[in-house]
View 1 (cartoon, rainbow, N blue to C red):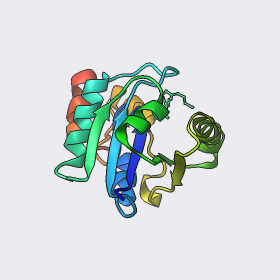
View 2: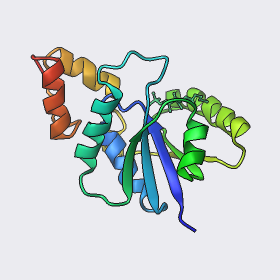
View 3: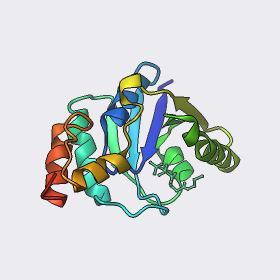
Amino acid sequence: MTRIAIYAGSFDPITRGHEDLMLRSLGFVDRLVVAVTTNLAKQPLFSVDERAALIRAAVGNEARIEVRAFSGLLVDFAREAGATMIIRGLRAVSDFEYEYQMALMNRHLSPSLETIFMVPSLDTTYISSSLVREIARFGGDVSGLVHPAVVEALRGKYPRA
Ligand code: PNS
């Protein structure tokens, strides 16, 4: 049986922390579908298509990773993709409450879909997309936090980046 997992998120933009989790998850799944959508609680900087393109640029030629945009419920997308797992990263205790509620709600909606929480590498734990956007906006150096393609894309949005 092929183990397919969904790594879902806003990825606005993808960071080195996201990349770390994607590569780690390939240690226990056969295929990873990176599922990009717009979180209704957030105002995105990049369009869904731009975010998906940046993920593809960052992931490179990894044949076991597929990047797809989706709208609607994550559980519906997961079912359609044939996934049995949802992967989410936990950086700090502050992430836990929201992630726990979402995991239980997704289980309520789709009982056979398991949420797997993963711990990122220590040197990426402090990275978040929102901080990357903020630093780029005010002209700070984000080159150690994101793939070069993302640095370029941020320059396109914020000329000072
Ligand atoms: O990276 P984010 O913004 O924390 O990711 C949150 C995301 C996109 C995974 C979540 O908002 C989501 O699953 N959205 C799809 C709609 C959905 O299924 N909502 C119910 C979640 S219990």
